[in-house]
Image 1 (cartoon, one colour):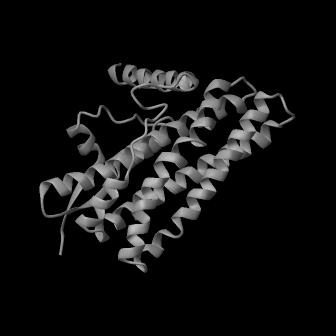
Image 2 (spheres, rainbow, N blue to C red):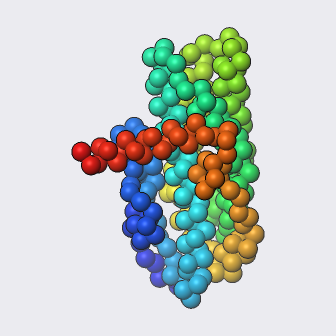
Amino acid sequence: MLSLIQISRADSQSARGGGKADGDGDKGRWVAWLTSRSILWPLMPGEQTRLMVAEVIDRLQREHRNIAKLLDALEHQLAVFDTAETPDYDVLAGIGDYFTAFPDRCHHPKEDLILRKLRERDPEAVEIVGDLEAEHERIATLARHFQEAVQNVLGEAEVSRDAFDAVARHFIKDQRRHLQMEEERFFPLALEKLTAEDWAEIDARITDEKDPVFGADTSAEFAALRNELLSWEEEDEAEEDS
């Protein structure tokens, strides 16, 4: 039987020199929640195997934290929109474009690889996470609906504030629910059930693709969104220093 050790996200991030945890409040509450989550890590034979497993899960959780930051940014823009003020439409468009491109092309396929291995290893146990592939498809559909709503507003179509707000908030709520389910049930189950050989095969099949917002080189179309996120980080640092 594998022994288990509990490792906190914050400790893991600190050990990597990953910077500060996000602040409290609306901007950081979901990122902070994801950062503070703990998981049971199997101690598999061989340090190399353990580090490989940690890297696969860490990569997925890092992407989750980035998604959470974007959901907070969207919520902030909706707060501006709801007061009849003008939100930053470049930021809204960037969020819509990101969610219709990166997660379904680069993030969900990694999780689907893990899910398929879990089904092979323990079909009954995997029922607790449901049909994750179908959920990924449904989330992608919600992302497209949100992007279409943004494009309709930008195209000056007749879209009521209430209708746009409802689409956007439904998207935020569902994304957060999905992230929470994976952090609390899917990742721990994978770490409990999959073997070193399973993780080696998963790691070999994962393809690296640059994140257009959080990668080293931000694409021009996402410049406004990236600047918004950097501005928030500077505000948080100023609040901590005050």
